[in-house]
Length: 384
Image 1 (spheres, rainbow, N blue to C red):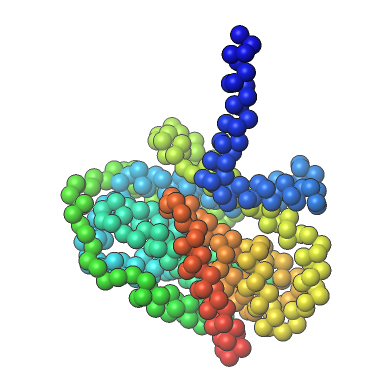
Image 2: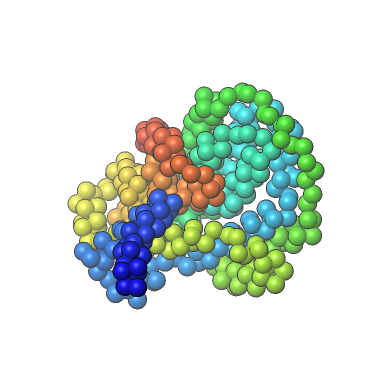
């Protein structure tokens, strides 16, 4: 009896290791964040009970609410219905890429870059079910588009909202100051679309079934979406999230059960790790020694530091060393490109797409775009 049980007990450790390796391969971002947090706690320990205070819970709750609402819209059948109408009016892959990039950029100026992704990426996935598309490339371009379009207004992204609030300038003045950079980046992006997507006609052979819509569910979800965004803007996302969870658990349980809970966990770890890194004494000392006395140095610091700690923490940190809000806004805006961590919107786009092998092609586009955008942004900062 004893000898028969030895093989199974001995195989437990290898099986556990294989399970951990499989999870790390499936969730590389989460795995890196967990390892980074362990390293930070070893070399710069903080009380574990203090770590939750580093999380921006309003952002996490807002993200959770948007995930539920997006899943509800998808479950209603509206996205497939809309996708059917889009593909029958757009005649080439390149034209579709132009449309999706323009839509994503336009929505991001007022709804924020994250919310724009929750509208455009699910629509793109529905389109892909009707006709074969270069989905990975389209997701990458839409991620770049929301980061570029959101530059224009204070409402476009969190770093803009923070810098606008601290600058004291009017809404119009902020838009005028950031418009040259936004326009230049959108021109770059449309030019890149021209060479990255073919003019091949869309294959509609798969669009053969009728696309029914559960209109009552869609209508209720639209009203809930407007209400939730209003509450989130009023810094009360928790109330809206509680109502959404309770309502959908009673009405449509599958909507709540099928959202990407791991994405929320990734955001929790990301806030803890990035803010812990930003608070390291040597990081502050390094920035202090470099000096941000000129617009170009503040701009470069924002563009580069965002690659390590993301552009929102970079904006908050650098504002302690420079009062040149325009240079900082230019820098952290450009910093949203490059390495995926530069903007949390990049992570959302990739997660929503649910496509394996996204990170390499993403960086093959985003890093060159960051380098060119860095040069263009620096020139515009000095000459406009």
